[in-house]
Image (cartoon, rainbow, N blue to C red; front, side, top):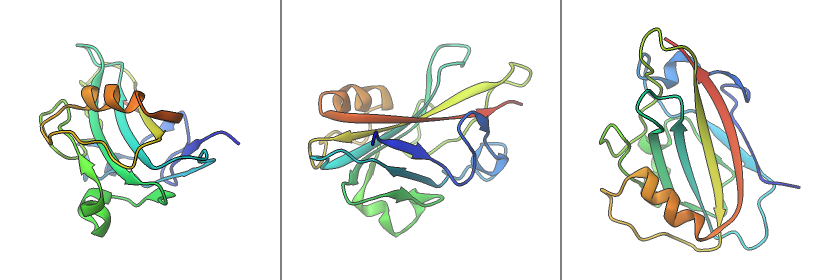
Length: 154
């Protein structure tokens, strides 16, 4: 069974509820996965918007997610599991989840939640590293990848 990623908050290809955007409460949505490949020792999760006017915009980079994890609760970065994981700087320059905030009238944007199963227990990167650099490093250790796409328009 391949690695799959879902959210109880929205279906693949559907609208992201406002509370998970910068127009709402800006909470990271709950996520669940299954089909973890043998040899997985940790996970990395990123969120990207390839529809941004200036090119792909990265909203979140969460790494060193433990291999025994099967989900991330809503607003994981503020909960008790936060200490087990690391968050890198997003393209807003913030070391936390920043949800969708596309330009008004720009049309629907597609937010790609990408989860990678890795063959290493952790990635050692400085906190100020960006999401793009995190993903570059993660790809060196990737066993499998799953994607969930949410849509948001203002």
